[in-house]
Amino acid sequence: MYYGEEIIKFQNVGMRYGLGPEILHDISLKLEEGSFHFLTGDSGAGKSSLLRLMYLAHRPSRGLISLFGKDIATTPRHILPKLRRMMGVVFQDFKLIDHLTTLENVALPLQIEGASENEIKSKASELLDWVGLSKQLSILPRLLSGGQKQRVAIARAVVSRPKLILADEPTGNVDYHIAKRLMYLFEELNKNGTTILLATHNKTLLTDFPKPILQLRNGSLSLATISNHQTEPLRT
Ligand SMILES: Nc1ncnc2c1ncn2[C@@H]1O[C@H](COP(=O)(O)OP(=O)(O)OP(=O)(O)O)[C@@H](O)[C@H]1O
Ligand SMILES: [Mg+2]
Image (cartoon, rainbow, N blue to C red; front, side):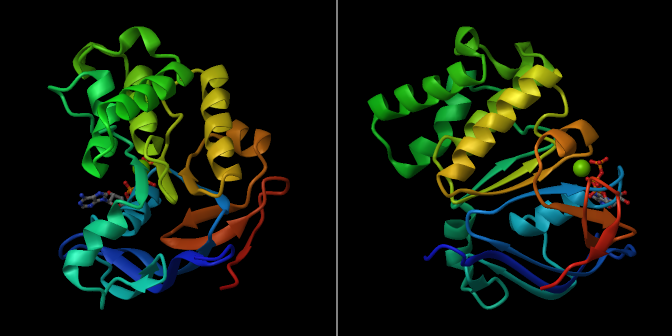
């Protein structure tokens, strides 16, 4: 894969839940390797739904989606989990595994990859240290605060250095100084080539970390600028 290659490409994608109304219409976008975008929009605008299409938890009702250069509609089903493993996802509701400790939750992606016990322990604990949870390594998720769970979820999403990180409101439950620290972590990963899409409606974050902003409004996507809050159609 060369720099500038499309990691995600959507062409006229529509999405609905079951037989309900279409909630995303004609979404066309390209995310190139190494890019860092924010995804914003009011509550209910469809940010989590758009991310769900990207991490293959939901099928589009129309249009084309390519991930890592592969059209997902024609890619053999057994290849899809491989594409999914190239992504790190921070879920809005964390999705930590209740019966595993903080360290075990973060270790999971490395275990799936077959990393050695030593490597797993050192990488997982290094990241948990970075997100400020070195004292909570052996604690179960139910004993953590919302912001602590969120930081475990972030550490788990990035620990295996995925090519693509999809983060759904990853700083929604933490104080702003922790949010900034987490943003530095995402920026560091991005400097090393990881493509990042981060959904947020935190305006301060959008202002303090200038990145291109994709905005969802009424089910459609446009490119927004923070300075004048204007939007323009996406060129794809
Ligand atoms: N599982 C579901 N079944 C049916 N409709 C859903 C489901 N999940 C979301 N929706 C609907 O899809 C629309 C978009 O919801 P979504 O969760 O993607 O918004 P969001 O931008 O992530 O909002 P928030 O900022 O509150 O997280 C909403 O109208 C919502 O009611
Ligand atoms: Mg959401």
